[in-house]
Image (cartoon, rainbow, N blue to C red; front, top):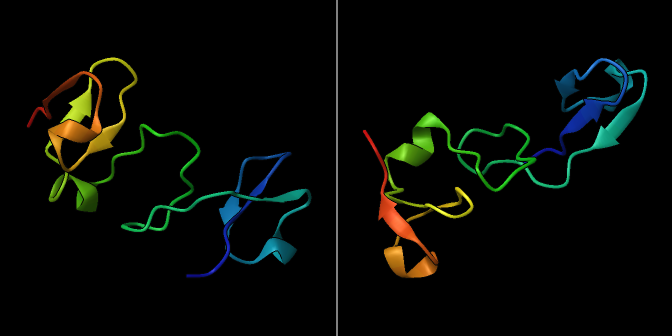
Length: 76
């Protein structure tokens, strides 16, 4: 997967940092949709097909309840 960059000035996101005035490499990109994953709470449409649980404490999604401290079934 290509590196993803976000402009610190305007917030634009791209895989070609030459198009940004102040590019900053985004640490992690979503393996499902490729969007920048700046928080653990990122849940995109492709992820919803496999994720069944969400932590009531921090909002982190997971495939299995035992991976979370306060699991509950994901709505929808």
